[in-house]
Amino acid sequence: MHINKLQISNLRNLTSVEIEPHPRLNIIYGPNGAGKTSVLESIVVLSRGRSFRTAQAAELIGPAGSTFQVFAETFSESSKTSRIGLERSKKHWRARKDGLDLSQLSQLTRVLPLVLMEPNSHLLVSGTPEVRRKFLDWGMFHVEQEFLQVWRRFSKILKQRNAALRFNQEELLDSMDVVFCDLGIRLGQLRKAHSESVAEQALVILTELSSGLERIRFEYRNGWPKGSLSDSLTNNRKNDLIKGATGSGPHRADIALIYRETSARAMLSRGEQKILASAMLLSQADILARQRKTPVLLLDDLASEFDAEHYQSVLNRALKAGGQVWVTGTSKQVLSVDHKMFHVKHGEVKEVI
Image (cartoon, rainbow, N blue to C red; front, side, top):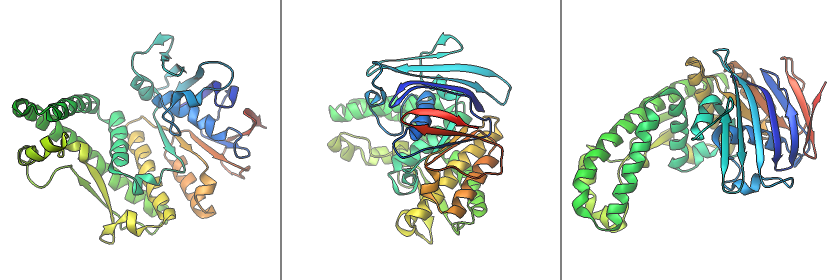
């Protein structure tokens, strides 16, 4: 997968940008605040419908109107060209693919899969379980056709069960719990299988990065104590009624990262956490590539995150994944691989010949 053409209008300080990136590697450089990260942000917004920097769409809208627009022409492994676009205002969005309106933002995500590595990626190691669940779910969305339907149905029954708990409607719980368990167990099975694939590939990548972290252990935890989910719901019903929320289930799942029999969060330095997070993210790219869904890889401010040796190792490994790579930084890079370079200044993006 790669982007042939990218157009950005009125997104932050990017008033009007049109570039034709290199299919393999693109370097975007310029001073801090120039708009480098906003270029990557536009691609993320086009793929996911939301930014990785803010939850408020209004913050993305520039001074030249009440909406922003992002358009891309993509080229897939199956030699299929797609044209996708997104327009967002403060409260509304409109998306199109090949001239047709889309009803769900997930339809854009399927066209433009991407892996994002940015300064907060270390939260994949040090952050909450929710971060790691979302990481697994993103991967399964692209490689497991059954996942989205199971996830949506489970999310719905979880909301219904929590509502019954809050309103003390205990008579509804027995029938709800049958559905909850069926969907919860299946969602857990899907996540566990994907987490094992991630762990296997991430350990290979850690060896290639010469990180010294090859003894990391990945341990999937399903979100309820030993025994069946049904028993856990029954045993904890009284406590759930008191709290008004379901305490057991895949919505509590996590990938425990263990290093020397201790939580990696406690044992690893910030730099080591970034390396481990990079390996996990790059593992997703490899897994998708094996299914001919190679994602675009976005590496934001890579040089400030790693020393020179690890910068080169991470970049080389990203290129090895086979997708189009975008890298931002404050200075030009001397590279032997074929690429394009773009300079960003005051929101203007120009190719450097």
